[in-house]
Length: 316
Image (cartoon, rainbow, N blue to C red; front, side):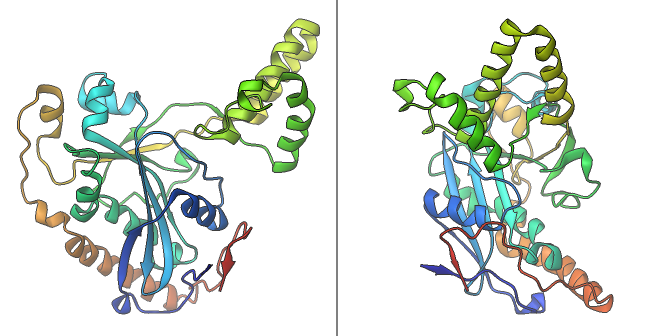
């Protein structure tokens, strides 16, 4: 099957936006062809969506189960919520990716985000999360970029500080292959079909790389303390991502979500019709038209479709 990614020059007033659910396999295959970072599988509850303008794809959305503890969320709610609270009420916008240059030319990332908080999206999620009333997400680049696609979306999406985390950056595929080919024959486990981790679980590449790096560190610490210190310094200075990500959340039109989740009081809404997609779309449309006109006036409207890894995806 071939796919048409949006790369046209239309005034936003001519758009016809729709979104539909797609299987995980199609989602991963397609997002990795247009994304600048690797999108991997996840465990837990997941909803996958393709967003279109007429018959052309303009972006992808994955709504999935949140992690159990985030300091920003704990501060927002004034307590460390337990897994029951989180699983019964919350979801995470883990992937919100516009096709480029649609995202740049039309503020496409903001449109996809507004779809995430729409009543139409909420109704779909409530199929599995009956008391769904809270969506959260984090920016991709955090403190390394001053501008984020989630900024300027209040009151629908609000910012609440920066997350604090250090993670290993994924290496290039050839480096990961060399590590895998060298260490897997020695440390692979039969229960993982010879691999060092269970690749059927979420984020298999990242977990595999973390395990391989851990194996190297453990052996160096035993065999050569000096090289271990050098390796530890190398990892901290060149292999770790210390970027803080922006934390964003939405109460999805409800006014007392914190009290509802913390104390069990009934949910109240002020005017949830504002979260109907038609209303959100019209709010975004004004901004998109201004963006479009400005780019055309400055001759900075982009026309080159950005494809990062075509693989077995036929693009027309």
